[in-house]
Amino acid sequence: MQKNETLWQRAQAVIPGGVNSPVRAFRGVGGEPLFFNKGEGAYLFDVEGHSYIDYVASWGPLILGHAHPDVVKAVQTAAIQGLSFGAPTPIEVDLAELICQHMPSIERIRLVNSGTEATMTALRLARAHTQREKIVKFDGCYHGHHDALLTQAGSGLSTLGLPGSAGVPAALVKDTLTLPFNDSEKLTDLFLKQGNEVAAVIVEPIAGNMNCIPAEKSFLQTLRTLTEQYGSVLIFDEVITGFRVALGGAQSLYGIQPDLTTLGKIIGGGLPVGAVGGRQAIMNQLAPLGAVYQAGTLSGNPIAVAAGLATLHVLEQPHVYPQLALLTARLLAGLTQAAMQAGVALKTRQVGSLFGLFFTDHALPTNNAEVKQTHLQTFQRFFHAMLKQGVYFAPSLYEVGFVSLAHTQKEVDYTLEMAKNAFKILND
Image (cartoon, rainbow, N blue to C red):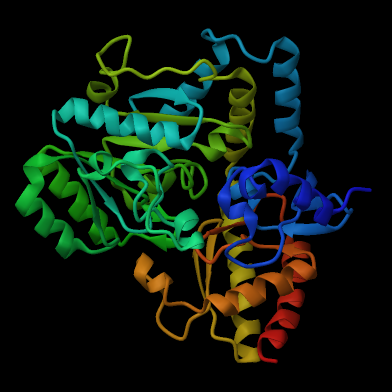
């Protein structure tokens, strides 16, 4: 049997920091990460055979749970036909049509390989469409690790205590303007001064990279009004929220249509995929129709597309989203009650199957600065107390949590019993 500790030592000898994505390193909670080799339903299993109820869901895409039979069957069937063609396939057309059907703002869509590629392409399209260069983003919103947006970028950098990334030339971020999330006044003021220079505003309508922080509807309405008034492109980054909070994404919950939408996570069913879609007039500027170049050998990979298509077909069943929301509500209600009984300051937030845990005596945070004022050490102790009892939450104060269709009342009940033990420890 392999050991977590041994694997961690081996990994650090050959992989920078021992991980292939920074938050996995447990820097935000301390200790050493676990190495998982199996996922089944609502559970993860580490190399030592321990099981954990999983509320990370591979950071969101596993809305059906691990190794859902429909998804596994779709991947196996596709793999038999070939792993990659670098050419058009029928199934990528099926997925594109299904996404357009459920998200009316998307008239045309281009599949890419990651959320980072999707947001990078969206910015390039917006700049070409408007013939402007300035981009507006919001503190705490993460839109991938490409240069133009890797400043004040949410969970990964916040977990490591970094304001931005080294290696990004100042010239590449000089046209990126950062504002506080949910601040309509500062947004309006910026547009009054520089609106005619703004190519695009990109925003997570429900931020999942500073924990769970929904945009206020008035904030998004102001954003939509200003971008229309000044001819700027409004980009909704729905890499996390797309098909997670509703079939139509967060934009369907708010009733606001962006010009461009970026997607990922769930539309790959657990495999690497991304997409950018939106108004035909903007999207048709992509090569080969237009002069905006974007390409990728593995874009529309048939294995990833098959997994995503199988996932979306399950999500079309009418019971799915109500079931997810109800179970998530029960989880949070139980955690709130248990914390209150133990005298622990905990507040929770839910949007569908997304949830946030905030250890704070103050009101629920509405922006990144307020999230940073919550009790980090309390969260760290809670995380490890739950992990030791077989419950796996995201190893960072700044990450959102996820409930999957594979979770049942059994997993919720166990989580709540273990939380009662954890809250007692927090008071010791």
